[in-house]
Amino acid sequence: MDDGRGYARELVFNYDHEKKNGRTSSVTQEIMGFKEQTQVQPNKVVDKKNNAWNKIIKDSDKIVYLIDLCGHEKYLKTTIFGLTGLVPDYAMIIVGANMGVQRMTKEHLGIALALNVPIIIVITKIDIAPAEIYKQTQDSITKILKSASCQKMPLLIRENDEMKVYAESMASNRICPIFCVSSVSGEGIDQLKLFLSQLQTRISQQTNIIKAPSDKVEFLIDGSFTVKDVGLVLSGTLVSGTVSIGQVLHLGPDKKGDFKTVTVKSMHYKRTPIEEVTSGNACCISVKSKDKEGMKSSDIRKGMVLLDKSITPKAAYEFDAEVIILHHATTIKLKYQAVIHTGVVRQTAQVLSLSQELLRTGDKGIIKFRFMSAPEYLHEGVSILFREGRTRGLGKIIKIYNL
Image 1: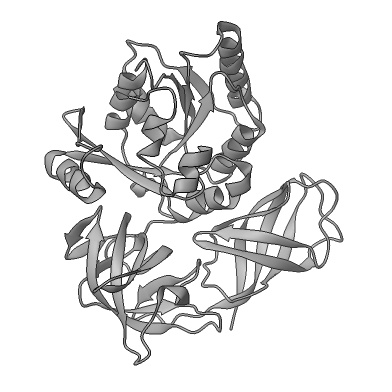
Image 2: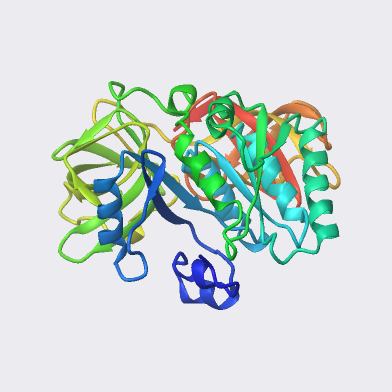
């Protein structure tokens, strides 16, 4: 439990500056293990993460993978990257009962809705919220969820509610459960844990993103680092195929749009060494380049992928997208620039042409974009989200101009 002064979150943060200002600025990953709907408790305070995770995996019959994203506006690009690139099953939006619904709460809600990710609301700090403000927060959330733009059915979870029914209904993406909890008094925490233990993965429904283990390999890279005596390690999500040790794959595209041939040396899944990994799982893969020069972590950038050696990969600077403008203060016209998010790709692109002269809030149209700094590996039919200041747009790629 928390002590009311940030003790619990200090165990989760990656960096010292996060502990000082209390703001998540990076993507943190944790796991919860359940055995017969009871949480497997690691000795987290004493154990290192490797030991704690190994114990949880060994003693559990179900694992829930938690990805902690940033709440502050300053780090919105990291939050969008996590939602688009890490392929989450559900989005849990945290609202302080004493703070009410902030502008960023609506922003995060909008992004999750745009990406069609089912939403769970958790109202925290109910032990310190004045009764009037607490009621106001609940009413605001209920009103937003019922609105025409959300079209959700808010369900305020009571103590004796049947969690299994709600958990099974989540896949329909129609209901939105609201949990009210306190991390200090522990109120509502048991219901939330029970609900998490009942949730099912949505991999079978995300067929536009996650492909079968028998398909050709595609691994989306979300991070890279160099480990002493190991070499280059890539972290990410396998969205298609099966990867095993010794397999030869293509890595790229680099800034010129080229792909290198690499060999898989070793793999870790939830900090545990493995021989093979199948689509739908996040893991770390150690690779070795077949070039004499080798590869460093600095050679890897966001947007790169590992692909099956039987694929002849091509990168593209330009693509057409069918878009809807969610919000823009004025108009979108030629040479307008915005940051494009699609999968693990996050790069500024410029408008080369539009299907009409101008696009305003609420307008639909076709835009031809060109990436500003490097070509990317793209697929037709995938969703894109673009932002610039307060501007937000959503769409899907309909045509790619490969190099």
